[in-house]
Each structure stands twice: as C-alpha cells, then as structure tokens.
Amino acid sequence: MTQNTAVPVFSMRPETSLLRNNQNFFFPEFSRNIVCGVSVFVRLSRIGRCIYKKFATRYYEEIGAAICFTAIDMLQSLQTRNQPADIARCFDFSLPVSPKTVSINDINLNNIDVQLNINGEISQKYNTSQLLFDTDEIISRISQYISFKIGDIILIGLPDTAIQIKTGYKLQAYLNSIKMLDFEIE
Image (cartoon, rainbow, N blue to C red):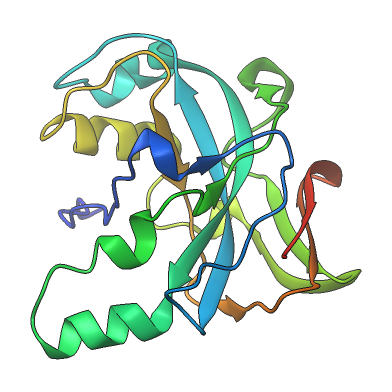
C-alpha cells in the first residue's frame, strides 16, 4: 500500500466570517454571484501543534455542519489578476455554522451522510467515507503548519460542486438526517 503524500487543501477564515444561530445570510452588496457548499466541521477542544494522527481524536469532541459561501465574481476577478482570493471566501458572515453539534461519541466521522437542501430540494449530498483524507489525517497534516487553539473550527469535506444562491432561498443542512442548519438568504 502506498502512502498518500498529498497535502490536504484547506482554507482559513477569520472569526468574523462565522454566522451563528441560524441567522439569515444577507447577500453582500459587493457581489452578484454567490455560491455555496455544505461541509462537516470539527471544533477543537485543545491547544495543539504537530499532532500525530493517532492522537488527533484527543483534540476534538464535537462536530457540526457549515455552509461555505464564496463570491464567485470577486474570486474570478482576483484570480485573473493573480491576487490572493481570500476576501472572496472570508468576508463577514460567509460561513454559517450550526448552533448545535453532535458528540463524536454518537457518530462515525468516517461515515456521515451530509446533505444540503435548498427550498426543500436536495442540492448536494455526499458521505464522508468518500473523502480523500479522514478527519484525524486532516488534523494531523494541518497541525504541521498551523497551531490550533480551543474553539477553532476545521472544515472536513467540501464538495467539488458549488450551488448558486439567490435572495429568498431557504437553506437547510443535515448530518445523517439530523437538521443542523435552517436559514434564509435575504
């Protein structure tokens, strides 16, 4: 068996990008084209750096769902000018996170059905078993570059396809049929 030497792709977001408590997402004035994708997150419960994979489960106790918004028109403009694209993903309230979480003792992280519904219809659906890296591997690899603090959130498994949103849409995110997020786009 060959070892996977790829580095997990990850994105960092400031705390100001978090949208909490199922608050509605307000379409920003600086973009006309926002897309989203649903993801699982783990919330870190310990400070850590250079974490070995076999110890990674010691650093988190709960998971939740997040919806990642990206301003595609801004992203494309920045990319054509070879400029950093962080602002297209990290703007204020661009990451709604579920107000409730699930204990890792109550769920198998490597077999979670993740689903995004828009206006009552399934828009994205995948299982965490399909991901290239498992949760512990992601934590271990990222921790080789970045120190973690208590409360940090790590997104696990953002799908390749993004769904365009519009004002008036109602979004709901599920983990194993448990409704984790439920809000509207204004």
